[in-house]
Length: 182
Image 1 (tube, helix red, strand yellow):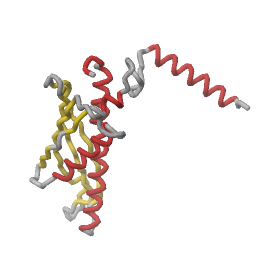
Image 2 (cartoon, rainbow, N blue to C red):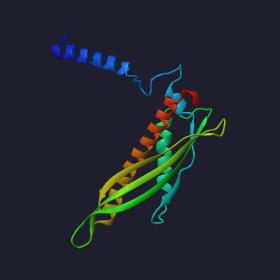
Image 3 (cartoon, rainbow, N blue to C red):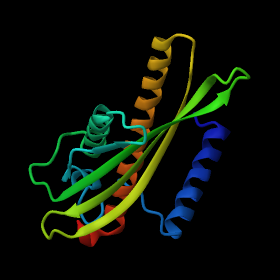
């Protein structure tokens, strides 16, 4: 039996769908021209991520994490046998103190990951799209060095996932908006 709430919700949903379709809204992952955007994203080859830090620390592992997160996000069902695009990204990491006690000891820090990336067409060698992404994650600086390292690692893992999601979304929007490049 349909309650009044279900009927009102259905009517509101139908009105919203009609309004959105009238303004040109198209779902990002819907089919267009018979091609699924997920299949197109699986054709993106991801180059090893170059790392830079402001303090000279080795962040090769963070670049590898970003590479793996991009692989997982762009082709969750596995890469296509035919790679058409190449995504090249660089990664910069910095950590800055936020909260400082009277004793000049920091108690909180921000970990910032910046990435610039470029999407290339492997068929023509043309640069199709370039962009930047940024992710910031905070963590507590504790009395225990081990606990602080684990908090920093957790913040870094979250920032890498956030950065990969942002890059994936920007590439997907570009490819969806430019069907002639697909």
